[in-house]
Length: 79
Image (tube, rainbow, N blue to C red):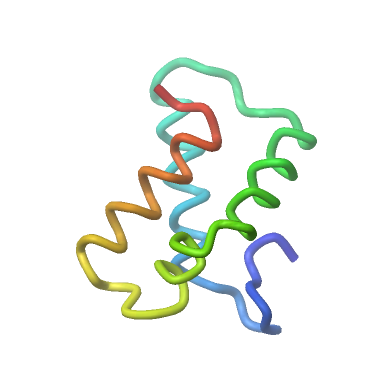
């Protein structure tokens, strides 16, 4: 599943980052990305070590939260 990271459980930090990025895109007046665009962005986050760290270790750390939300927003194309 898209919201699981190496586990059977949903990763809340990953889910938060994707949902915030998509909501920011909608808020900017942009259409939602295509399913292919979403898959591509999810693949990209799965290959970014700093992002992976931000969703697996100290997930409430302010800098980690800022990074994961900014990175996901960038990948999902919100302004």
